Image (cartoon, rainbow, N blue to C red; front, side, top):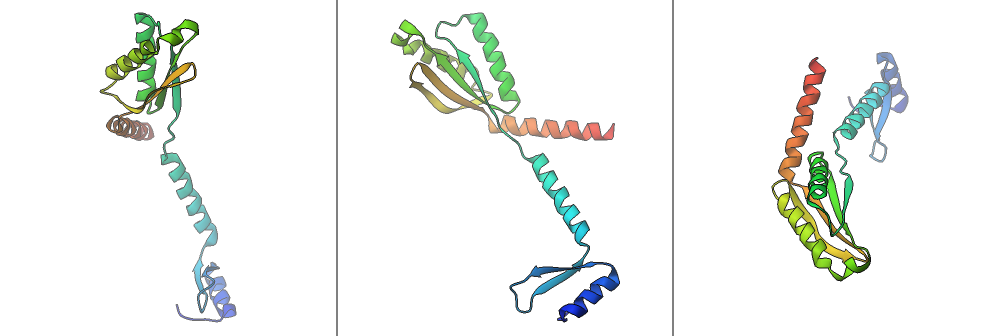
Length: 164
Protein backbone atom coordinates (compact mmCIF):
# COMPACT_ATOMS: atom_id res chain seq x y z
CA UNK A 1 0.00 0.00 0.00
CA UNK A 2 2.97 2.28 0.42
CA UNK A 3 4.85 3.93 3.25
CA UNK A 4 2.66 5.28 6.09
CA UNK A 5 3.39 6.47 9.63
CA UNK A 6 2.55 3.89 12.30
CA UNK A 7 -0.46 5.83 13.61
CA UNK A 8 -2.02 6.18 10.16
CA UNK A 9 -1.36 2.51 9.30
CA UNK A 10 -3.01 1.46 12.57
CA UNK A 11 -6.03 3.65 11.76
CA UNK A 12 -6.35 2.06 8.28
CA UNK A 13 -6.25 -1.44 9.85
CA UNK A 14 -8.86 -0.46 12.48
CA UNK A 15 -11.17 0.97 9.80
CA UNK A 16 -11.12 -2.38 7.99
CA UNK A 17 -11.57 -4.30 11.27
CA UNK A 18 -8.18 -6.03 10.88
CA UNK A 19 -4.84 -6.09 12.69
CA UNK A 20 -1.55 -4.38 11.82
CA UNK A 21 1.11 -7.11 11.95
CA UNK A 22 4.83 -6.35 11.76
CA UNK A 23 6.45 -8.70 9.24
CA UNK A 24 10.05 -7.45 8.96
CA UNK A 25 10.99 -5.20 11.92
CA UNK A 26 14.66 -4.86 10.87
CA UNK A 27 13.87 -3.51 7.42
CA UNK A 28 14.15 0.22 6.74
CA UNK A 29 11.29 1.21 6.96
CA UNK A 30 9.75 -1.72 8.91
CA UNK A 31 7.35 -3.83 6.85
CA UNK A 32 3.82 -4.43 8.19
CA UNK A 33 0.79 -6.26 6.86
CA UNK A 34 -2.88 -5.63 7.46
CA UNK A 35 -4.55 -8.99 8.20
CA UNK A 36 -6.82 -10.89 10.55
CA UNK A 37 -4.18 -12.15 12.99
CA UNK A 38 -6.52 -14.60 14.75
CA UNK A 39 -7.37 -16.28 11.46
CA UNK A 40 -3.65 -16.36 10.54
CA UNK A 41 -2.76 -18.14 13.83
CA UNK A 42 -5.65 -20.57 13.35
CA UNK A 43 -4.48 -21.46 9.83
CA UNK A 44 -0.93 -22.01 11.11
CA UNK A 45 -2.20 -24.34 13.85
CA UNK A 46 -4.22 -26.35 11.28
CA UNK A 47 -1.15 -26.68 9.00
CA UNK A 48 1.04 -27.82 11.91
CA UNK A 49 -1.57 -30.39 12.97
CA UNK A 50 -1.78 -31.71 9.40
CA UNK A 51 2.02 -32.01 9.19
CA UNK A 52 2.10 -33.99 12.46
CA UNK A 53 -0.68 -36.25 11.19
CA UNK A 54 1.19 -37.08 7.97
CA UNK A 55 4.56 -37.86 9.55
CA UNK A 56 5.31 -41.52 10.09
CA UNK A 57 6.91 -42.82 13.24
CA UNK A 58 9.01 -45.94 12.80
CA UNK A 59 9.27 -48.15 15.86
CA UNK A 60 11.82 -50.87 16.49
CA UNK A 61 10.30 -54.13 17.66
CA UNK A 62 12.37 -56.98 19.06
CA UNK A 63 11.99 -60.72 18.59
CA UNK A 64 14.11 -63.08 20.69
CA UNK A 65 15.20 -66.52 19.54
CA UNK A 66 17.23 -69.31 21.14
CA UNK A 67 19.90 -71.34 19.29
CA UNK A 68 18.00 -74.64 19.73
CA UNK A 69 14.62 -73.31 18.53
CA UNK A 70 12.19 -75.89 17.15
CA UNK A 71 10.54 -75.63 13.72
CA UNK A 72 7.07 -74.76 15.07
CA UNK A 73 8.40 -72.04 17.34
CA UNK A 74 10.53 -70.67 14.51
CA UNK A 75 7.55 -70.38 12.14
CA UNK A 76 5.42 -68.70 14.82
CA UNK A 77 8.11 -66.13 15.59
CA UNK A 78 8.70 -65.61 11.87
CA UNK A 79 4.97 -64.79 11.46
CA UNK A 80 5.25 -62.22 14.25
CA UNK A 81 8.27 -60.66 12.53
CA UNK A 82 6.31 -60.52 9.26
CA UNK A 83 3.43 -58.80 11.06
CA UNK A 84 5.82 -56.19 12.48
CA UNK A 85 7.37 -55.60 9.06
CA UNK A 86 3.95 -55.25 7.41
CA UNK A 87 3.10 -52.56 9.97
CA UNK A 88 6.19 -50.68 8.75
CA UNK A 89 8.34 -51.27 11.84
CA UNK A 90 11.97 -52.28 12.01
CA UNK A 91 12.68 -55.54 13.81
CA UNK A 92 15.70 -56.35 15.97
CA UNK A 93 16.32 -60.10 16.00
CA UNK A 94 18.17 -61.34 19.08
CA UNK A 95 19.61 -64.81 19.63
CA UNK A 96 20.14 -65.45 23.35
CA UNK A 97 22.89 -67.88 24.31
CA UNK A 98 23.12 -69.56 27.72
CA UNK A 99 25.84 -71.64 29.30
CA UNK A 100 27.48 -74.06 26.91
CA UNK A 101 25.53 -72.66 23.95
CA UNK A 102 28.19 -69.90 23.89
CA UNK A 103 30.64 -72.46 22.48
CA UNK A 104 28.57 -72.67 19.25
CA UNK A 105 27.68 -69.17 18.02
CA UNK A 106 27.47 -70.54 14.49
CA UNK A 107 24.11 -72.13 15.43
CA UNK A 108 22.70 -68.69 16.15
CA UNK A 109 24.23 -67.34 12.96
CA UNK A 110 22.54 -70.06 10.88
CA UNK A 111 19.15 -69.16 12.43
CA UNK A 112 19.65 -65.48 11.59
CA UNK A 113 20.76 -66.31 8.05
CA UNK A 114 17.78 -68.64 7.56
CA UNK A 115 15.40 -65.93 8.81
CA UNK A 116 16.99 -63.32 6.54
CA UNK A 117 16.68 -65.71 3.60
CA UNK A 118 13.00 -66.41 4.41
CA UNK A 119 12.21 -62.69 4.61
CA UNK A 120 14.36 -61.46 1.69
CA UNK A 121 11.30 -60.52 -0.42
CA UNK A 122 9.75 -58.28 2.30
CA UNK A 123 12.75 -57.04 4.31
CA UNK A 124 16.31 -55.86 4.01
CA UNK A 125 19.10 -56.43 6.53
CA UNK A 126 20.02 -53.08 8.05
CA UNK A 127 22.80 -54.34 10.32
CA UNK A 128 24.56 -57.66 9.85
CA UNK A 129 24.57 -60.21 12.71
CA UNK A 130 27.05 -59.34 15.43
CA UNK A 131 27.85 -60.82 18.81
CA UNK A 132 27.51 -58.64 21.92
CA UNK A 133 28.15 -60.50 25.15
CA UNK A 134 25.78 -63.46 25.37
CA UNK A 135 23.49 -62.18 22.60
CA UNK A 136 23.72 -61.99 18.83
CA UNK A 137 21.79 -59.15 17.14
CA UNK A 138 20.59 -58.37 13.64
CA UNK A 139 18.39 -55.44 12.55
CA UNK A 140 16.00 -55.80 9.62
CA UNK A 141 13.76 -53.16 8.06
CA UNK A 142 10.84 -53.41 5.63
CA UNK A 143 11.64 -52.82 1.98
CA UNK A 144 11.00 -49.19 0.97
CA UNK A 145 8.56 -50.32 -1.76
CA UNK A 146 6.55 -52.35 0.77
CA UNK A 147 6.44 -49.44 3.22
CA UNK A 148 5.29 -47.06 0.47
CA UNK A 149 2.56 -49.49 -0.62
CA UNK A 150 1.37 -49.82 2.98
CA UNK A 151 1.20 -46.02 3.38
CA UNK A 152 -0.88 -45.71 0.18
CA UNK A 153 -3.29 -48.41 1.40
CA UNK A 154 -3.80 -46.67 4.74
CA UNK A 155 -4.48 -43.35 3.01
CA UNK A 156 -7.07 -45.06 0.75
CA UNK A 157 -8.78 -46.58 3.82
CA UNK A 158 -9.00 -43.16 5.46
CA UNK A 159 -10.56 -41.78 2.26
CA UNK A 160 -13.26 -44.47 2.25
CA UNK A 161 -14.03 -43.89 5.95
CA UNK A 162 -14.53 -40.16 5.30
CA UNK A 163 -17.13 -40.91 2.62
CA UNK A 164 -19.12 -43.31 4.81
